[in-house]
Image (cartoon, rainbow, N blue to C red; front, top):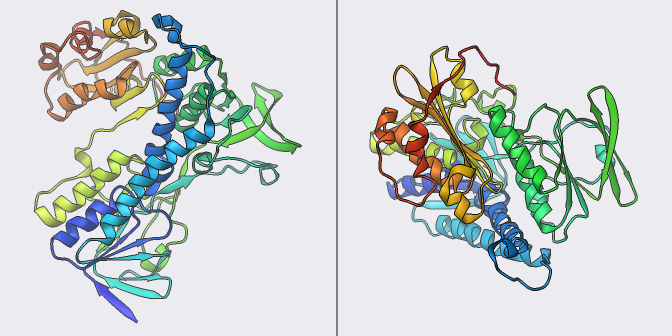
Amino acid sequence: MMETFDAIVIGTGQAGPPLAKRLADAGMRVAVVERHLFGGTCVNTGCIPTKAMVASAYVAHMARRATDYGVVAGDAVRVDMARVKARKDAISERSRLGVERMLKSLTNCTVYEGAARFQSPRDVQVESSLLHSERIFINVGARASIPSMPGLEGAPYLTNSSMMKLDVIPAHLLIVGGSYMGLEFGQMFRRFGSQVTILEKSPQLLGREDQDISNAIRDILTDEEIDVRLNSDCIDVSRSGDSTTVHVQSKGEKQTVSGSHLLLAVGRRPNTDDLGLDEAGVRRDAGGYIVVDDQLRTNVPGIWALGDCNGKGAFTHTSYNDFEIVASNLLDNKPRSLADRIGAYALYIDPPLGRAGLTEQEARQRSRPILVGKRPMTRIARAVEKGETKGLMKIVVDAESEEILGASVLGTGGDEVIHAVLDMMYARAPYPVLRRAVHIHPTVSELIPTVLGELVATEQTSVATNT
């Protein structure tokens, strides 16, 4: 028997639940479909649980540094991984249950638990139920990408999801991939007590960042005795007893590195394989991401794709903004577009990296003169007072229009400080407005006007972006 709804929302990540609520509150009859855990990646295996673990790792790190601050902490620091996991699980569970309860208590909303599959552009099968609607919103997220690597089928490995189940500290954690997820887990488990080796096939960590930022991050990690190996292409894996060995090709030479646990951190892939999108005629790109326009509409009228599955952001904040764009266009008669969004994100190592807009490399590719301001954290009083002086601050400006093009804040509070620049970029204010602002002392943010007062021209030769 077919049930007809005004809207169907497939998936309950950061875009689906608030959209379902807005639609239901507007009087529409809404069906929500979730096949596994309510809340999506952020709540269950991403932002919330990992940052809870980062917090535990930070406490362990600062406890070991207690004498630097004149504090006698007593016995040697010991991490109880089972309690770290229990704390993380409790925080994640509260968020997950909150999403589930909200959806199941909504007036005009029916929740279906099971896998959704399109039967046509207007019909979705969920277990034994057939749902019909003229409006369908896809919010199915993404998962860890597993590389094709000989021997991997015979060697146990971890992903960002299965890392959440660990209640022991690996003796030696091998991480394949030197990008955001790999670096966060690497520093985290080093602080818990693991030996950590990071294998990255590129010549730098974090290929999308500028070289100076990447180098500074590498220094932060190596200062904590994390073994970072660049130009290391993993060619196969083998398992013997309790040890996993990764065979690496590096600058023409073969090397091996062995550890107790292996984490694969080589990117994400969208959960679009088994949705029956071909039956609906919904187009995907070569990577499996659903192709959308600037208002999140697919090529099929009446079908939208939001969040990680559309390849337009892959962050919690961009997913939620997808919801805002769709809701504003459909319900508020206030046109909004992806084109209005400025790229921004953070890397949650310690100290964190806050990023907004273009890198210096990307700005140079515009073939326009640019100005760049930099300041190391060692010259920022607040960082010195806290005893956390690693990193740097960097701002890129268009020399002709005085537009702020982008910024990187790698240092204590960098994930918060970056918003002072980001908000000015959204206001489209020329950089002298921020240059003349009076910020509170002592803070890290107070140095932003100083950096803008020390802008210098840089070479305008084209620089290829590392990918």
